[in-house]
Length: 111
Image 1 (cartoon, rainbow, N blue to C red):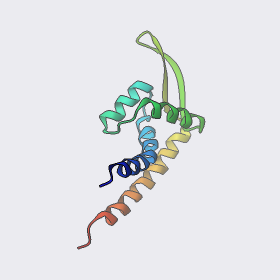
Image 2: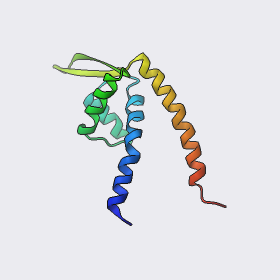
Image 3: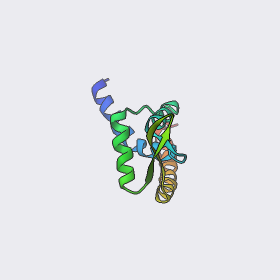
Image 4: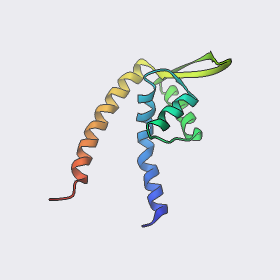
């Protein structure tokens, strides 16, 4: 098996899934490091160089809101879903469920 090609295809597969994972994780407010840890604990490994630009892009798109808060003596930027983000998460979740059902059927070996 061509490992390099497999790695590239895995990366493509993960890109869209990361948006859904971040939105789902931000139902409750979190700051960057806690968000990254939450995702890792759920089995979604994401590096800082991917996470922070993604979060900023989602905020620019109006799907997240943020605010600076003092936490443990330091200012941290906390993120959470905006009202539009809640609606988008619901829509994307429905799409994900439908896609998962369709793919599960396609991935089943023929009888």
